[in-house]
Length: 177
Image (cartoon, rainbow, N blue to C red; front, side):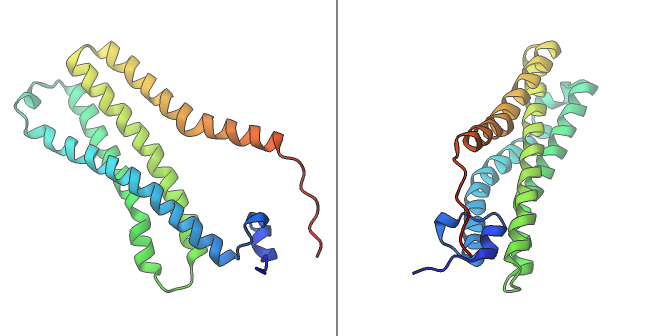
């Protein structure tokens, strides 16, 4: 029989999993790494794409607004890259230090910040592309729409799902001590 670590339950662990705090931290770390693998690829491709633009012939035709939006997009994309890759460096520095809970907590925060900055970077790129290809007005509209899609899919939808599941979940009986 696997013993449920009461401290794990107190820290937000799921008692039905029957895992210790250490096992939960290992699982949380592995889940976070899987999520970061997806976002790292996307943000690195976006950053690489942006870094090639100044070397294109038409780049010299951009007006001041477009160059500013481009520079903001590059800075946002580079910052998102740093935030999303930071947990790897963090892990290297804390490796074998028995600080998994600290690593998971801080890496979660870095990943969340990275996702926020990534959404802003993608919106800035949409603004630039539509501004150059169609019109500034449509660029602003499309950029705002894309940012709204990110907010709905990455924030509103998960929070609504969490709220709905909390409303449906029956109260769990008290655990005997």
